[in-house]
Amino acid sequence: MFHETRKGAGLPYSALNAVVVPRPIGWISTLSAEGVANLAPYSFFNAVAYRPPQVMFSATSNHRLGGLKDAVADARATGEFVVNVATWELREQMNASAVPAPREVDEFEYAGLTKADCRLVRCPRVAESPVSLECRYARSLEMLTDDPEDPNTVVFGEVVGIHVEERVLSEGRIDFLELRPIGRLGYLDFVRVDNVFTMERPEWVAEPPS
Ligand SMILES: Cc1cc2nc3c(=O)[nH]c(=O)nc-3n(C[C@H](O)[C@H](O)[C@H](O)COP(=O)(O)O)c2cc1C
Image (cartoon, rainbow, N blue to C red; front, side, top):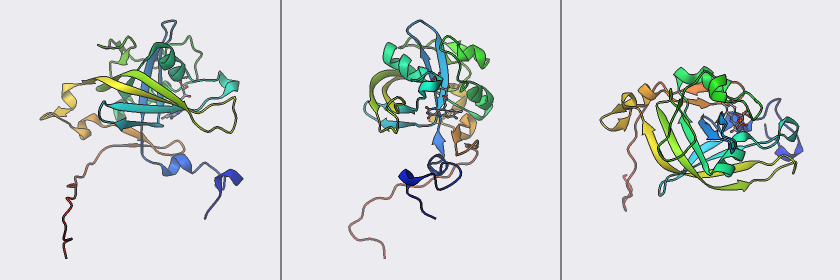
């Protein structure tokens, strides 16, 4: 089948987030300008550069449900955010933190999570998460939108510090089966890392092997 996206849905549910899979989940913590901690998962999330290390997350918004999401507003207001890794063990808390709570609600408390101090930024990280990236806000971009009242906003940040728990390290490398990160599929489906395979990078040779 084929459908032109501007001419209707084509399938009963959006295909986009079911075909761009699996997506890593950036579990974003921030502190509001008023000092309230905020936590929510974003699967429109990725690493975008090495030097300096940079990440992005992208937020939809709904003016009928409070408009700009807290993670975007807070990152812009304070210049900081933290990306916590969502793991299989923390799946329920991660999901609970997606609740569309009013701005004054602390989702760490709502989801039953502990705040740990960061070293270089003031917003808290998730103590239970084995990996957290401390980020300084770099810039944000407004993407195309069908409704100017509901912007799609991408936030970029520089990763200035990385916390890694010893238990997910093996000889200086992340042990993926110990970390067990979860990722987003479409609909209400998720995936967890429980097997890994390795491939060597190809090297360019003038004469391709016959
Ligand atoms: C696994 C998962 C991934 C999500 N990814 C996104 C996303 O990429 N962008 C977005 O705008 N909302 C996403 N959401 C919804 C937000 O987490 C939700 O709107 C949340 O209330 C936003 O919180 P905040 O306003 O405190 O930042 C996701 C929800 C879940 C459960």
